[in-house]
Amino acid sequence: MFFASDNWAGAHPNIAAGLSANAGGFSTAYGDGALDRAVYQRFSEIFEREVAVFFVATGTAANSLALTAYNKPGGISFAHRESHVIEDECGAPVYFSGGSRLHEIDGALGKIDPHNLERTIGRFAPEIVHWGRPMAVSITQSTEVGTIYGLDEIETISVVAKQYSVPLHMDGARFANALVALDTTPAEMTWKRGVDILSFGGTKNGCWCAEAIVLFDLDRARELAFLRKRAAQLFSKSRFVAAQFEAYFKDGLWLDTARHANAMAARLAAAIEDSATAKLAWLPQANEVFAVIKKAEAERLQAAGAAFYDWHKPHGFDGHIGEDELLYRFVTSFATTADEVDRFGQLIA
Image (cartoon, rainbow, N blue to C red; front, side, top):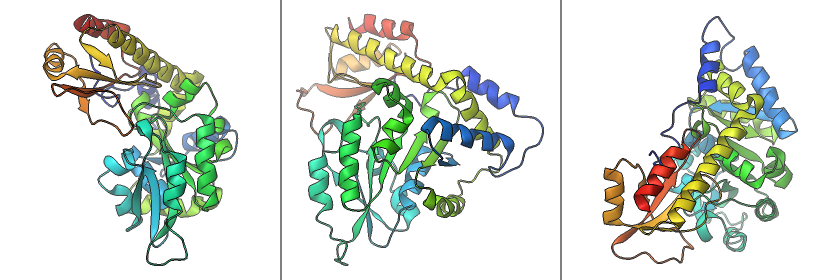
């Protein structure tokens, strides 16, 4: 019963097979092989326009370089106070950019409130040299607490960003999970709603190690190529990242794995709703489920083989958590089975 993280899951068999199929022979290095170029073209087809694609090793690298692509002296990036770039990347966006800042924006359950964004970003007049100046806005899709920005919400935030002449970045570590939940297209969830640059994650959804920066603003592509190299993120044998993405996209595998993970989350949430010993904190929208459970009961579940973590109370959560209770996070993946979920459901029934 592995619900600790979708990072705990291995590689999907099709993706492992894709790696094996490309293990032999020779291919041009540093992202210029035939398979690399074919995958770049596939990204453009998926997003319905020409895009620039940069493979990187981790989501942290993708986020940090995406924001650094728009760096400027005194630059400030605005993100939700509980976003991954602020809470979980050890200052990497600041480090890679050589000293830009991250500024927290409030919003309920992981999502930036556009009014808070406009009020905050408006405080930093770019002509005032002492304060610093807006550099980028970053949103996470799906968020750290499993919620999803609707298409209109993305567009609303984009309008605020464009009002202050800064780009909109999307941290898409769980991009596919949000995409299938909204039943929309990659184009509609990104550039058609004003997103300029995307951190596109595959690792959490069945890949071994496949992350990419997808750049819709092609004028930035040459500069980003140098930034990636300087950050030690240019793979020599990049065909092995390309091989993962080739298998990931083939026959819609990436959408199927995301749908499965989301379905398992919904099944898990239903079990928690029916439970006498756990309370669903809020309805899941993607593949993360949050529940309020007594500490002693959580320890019993973990001793029985269930893997999950406690979580901090997010901004905007108004549910009650008793002194003997904690908020816990459960994450499902492509590898989660209905049997795992049902066994957990029996434990908490």
